[in-house]
Structures are given as structure tokens and as C-alpha cells.
Image (cartoon, rainbow, N blue to C red):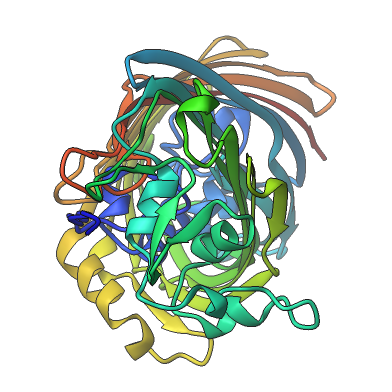
Length: 520
């Protein structure tokens, strides 16, 4: 009798390899938090000052968190802000260390504001209108790892976790190859493994499976017979872009108010692969040499929220600002595709693709509010300090029709594991000469999870130039000061002594932005 004592961990395999804290939660919960979290870019000026502009205003980038920021304008302005974003990761996997860098160009800001005088000398002096696109998240990311082990295999994991069903229920018929993917209790990966010949049944046991990387001896013991070279690769590319439609006003140059409707453009592409290669194919009863599993997931959609804000000048030089935003209602659609290929002596080389899957759902992010204090000294000095709070435990998921019951477990998990955050932004701007500015900034983004520290610290610096003709140019550099760390399993452990390999990652990011602007 064969021996396969299954000891699966409680975690769930998500896209092959994700963070351990995410692996312990449903994938949709992880995405809901990721799309709800905002790390502001804006213009080079606002980025260099740590986006501490809630009370200072007068900058396109600040419209993402205080609609009253445009009320300060006494002129019209156009800005264009291209940027470069880079993520650096270090991975330890099976005794080997790997470094990766993922960089991409982006558009951090594109905007216009128009200032219109009312002709009055008291009361409402200006009505201003603005439309701007500000980037609030960048998902560029890449990591990989490679090492050698013989304690377990991904194909062994698939075989051990296979439901007790006959193999012919997973066979893809020529006239309807999609059928088993939607009519079988097996996962898509298991169906692909069966149809490529990388998973097979034991003789006399039609509902018990072995992976092509496993041997079985006369006593029924199942084991990986030799060294396997295992590697993984994963990459993300994407963004969240705020398109802000704004109206604001100026009352006696003392009180400024604004309202905005923000439409978010959301796009994320994720690619993961897992590869196993036999160190010596002769040791494997199946003649296994190699296999690769690839998975691509694209999430796209829109989000909508409404916000209102104010800035007040109680005394000369001092400003106080605040804003509040409604929940962001996001409508998302996922499209995914999976493929598997490999070689065994029995089936030769085989490659099979899954059908293209899709699913639509909603994410509702929590209320958010900001408070800020600013102080200016003539045209020489400006200082801003902001406080932002939002409670991520209030995020909830629902079906496209709005039914929360479909995500009851996810919503309960987010309510108990996510938490409120207290974010701090601070910045300073000096003008040593009338046309030249120097700026410094700092951001602290609080951890959004109770049992996992994903907090971030950023430092920023920048320079600015203003011409008498209305043209200006600003540059800024922002560097994450702390590494974020993740530990994840490549797959689940599944038998006594057959533990899954564990990878540890450290990563951080930086960005460089340039703003070209015209005042008229």
C-alpha cells in the first residue's frame, strides 16, 4: 500500500508565490488593501515637500487630498510631470541570494487650473476650476529566486492536494477543451498537470495521483528521488491614477473651499512562473526533465469618490486646512490565463493552456480625512505638516451586483486583521533667491495590518526654478528609507518531511520626477 500522509498547512496557494501574510488571507482581501492604499506622487514640488500641502495649497498634486488647494490660485496654470519609478528587491531562497530591479516610466501629474475673478472686492473673490491626473500608486515590482533541493516539489504538491476524482473528469475533450476547467472540483493547475502528463494516477488506484517528479518504491513510499533545481519569478506592472475634477473658491483671501469628484483609473498586470528541472533525469521513474507553470492576471477598473476641503488663514502667515473623502467605490474586472509545459519519457514534451477566465467584483474603501498646518514667511519660506487617517478594517468586498455575502469570509477577515492608520507628511520650501527654490520632505505611512508591519518611511528633496515669463521647472527625488520584508512559501507543505521551500524578500523603491509648468 502506498503511503502519502498529507499535512497541508492552512495557507492557500495564491498565484504561485505571494507574501506569507497575504497567503494566509484570500487573494481578494490582499487586492482590496492594495488598491485602497495611496502613496501620493503629484507634481515635483508637492513630492519634494512630502506632499504636506493640505494647508498650503497652490499645487496640482495637493488636489488628490485637499480640493481647496486650487482655491489659493490667483492665476491659471498647466503642469506636466513625467517620472521614473524603480523597485529594488533582494531575495533569499534555498540558500541563494538574488537581486532584482524593476523600473518604469510613468506620468505622475498632468493638470490644468483656471482662475476666474468675480470682480468683487469683498466676499467671493475667485471661482476656480481644475482638472488634473495624479498618480497615487505604482505597482512596478520584480523578484526571483533559484536553488536546489530534493525535499518536495510543486508537482508533488498538486498530486497530494488532488480531490478524489477519476482522472478522466479532468481530460480536455477536443470538441470542448474548456469543460473540465468549469465542471471539475480540481484546480486549474491540477487540470493542466493532468493534461500535460505531469500528473498521473497509481496503477489500481484511479483517484490517487503522483507528480512526475515523484518515485514510488515497492513498499509504497513516495519521494522525490533526486535533486530538483527550483526557481520562481514574479513581476507586477500597474498604477492607480486619480483624475480629479475640481471647483473651488476664495473668500476675502482668508477662507478657501473646494469640492472634487475623483475618478480612479486602475490597472495591474501580474505574472508568476514556477520551474522545476531534474538534476539527473535518470533517477526519475517517469524520465522527468523539467516543467514550467505560468500564470498571468490582469485587473482593471475604475473607482469613484467625492471629497470636500477647506483652507483658512486666521492670522498672517498661518494656514490651517482639512478635507474629507467619501469611500472610494471601485468596480474591478479580472482576466487570467494559466499554462503548463514539461517533458517526461512517457509523454514527451507537452504544453497546455487554460481558457481565459474572468470575474468582476466591487471594492469599497473607507472614509479618509486630512488635517494640515502651514506657515509662510513672505516669499522666502513655507512649512507644512499634515496628518491623514483612514481605517482599512472598514474595507469590504461585494459582487458586481453589490451582494456582500459572496465575500463574507474575506470581509470578516479584513475587519479583524486590517486597522486604522495614522499617516504623517512634512515638508519645507525655501527661496534663497527669488527664482530658485530648495525643498525637503518626509512621509510616514503607518502599517495597515495588525499582525504584519508594512509601514513605509520616505525622504524627499527637490529644486525649483521660476522665470519671470511664467515658465517654471521643478525636480524631485524620493527614496524609501526602510526595507519592507516578506516571507512566503512557494507552495504548501504536503507530506511528512516534504516541506515547501521558503523565500524571504526585502524591497524598497525610489522615484525621480520632473515638472514642467506654465502660469498665465
